[in-house]
Amino acid sequence: MKTVLYIHGKDGSPSESEHYKPLFPDCEVIGWDYQTFTPWETGAEIHKAIEELKTKYKNILLIANSIGAYFCMNAGIDQIIHKAYFISPVVDMEKLNGVELAGEWLHYVKSHPVKWNAPTHILYGSKDNLISFDDGLTVLESVDDAATICWGDDWRTPTIDQWSELLENTTFTWVEENGVKGRLVKGCNGNTIFLPAAGFREECDSVCTEVGVYWSSTLHNYIPERAWSYHFTFENCHLCGTYERTRGQCVRAVLSPK
Image 1 (tube, rainbow, N blue to C red):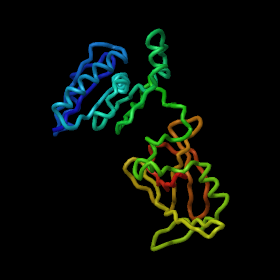
Image 2: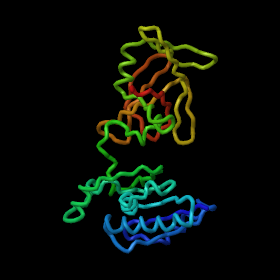
Image 3: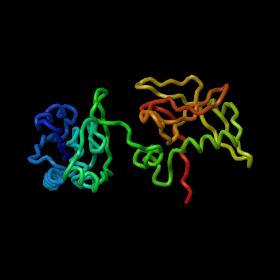
Image 4: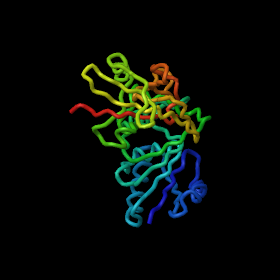
């Protein structure tokens, strides 16, 4: 049997777990209340609670809110739980808007960077002003790279520099192969790859009007919600950095060099 453990945020309550019971009808949903409020003490509390649940349940799903998620990520439980769902999680305490750390908290945060490898789904509120979306990254980490997740550690999504190199050193010809339109990419050595014009998806609607849009792993420098893409139609090809990372686009994975 599976169980869902809910960890609330600051000034929250275990009773909030009631909201999640309809979403997990086949699981026992448990709201849990911590008695301390520091990452080192509360993390230890959460670890002990998870270890106890593991003796009763085969799979433990975790739902955590705000700073409750931060406490969980400092509990050493990512190898114990089956999956996590975070709601507006605090990931970097030093980047909270309007919060200045000092004393033991500051020392702990600086000396204990977050390490979290459990499969995790994250939901941020559109009006969440506490959390900064800027994580300082310029390229996707492997845990966020769809190519790596789907095909293994040897695969990744190409960077925008690699897409640019492809554009500069190959020919891109609009063709139709087996009834599928797209661009045939041909190198100077004669090797070719075919990129279907598979369109893209926004929310629930699939848009496919003879256009190809392929993600790169390179993030936008100033707008962290966006990433760079390679975009083509039957008329032209270009690189574009205006698309939101929530947009559904194609991925043409590349094999990492050994």
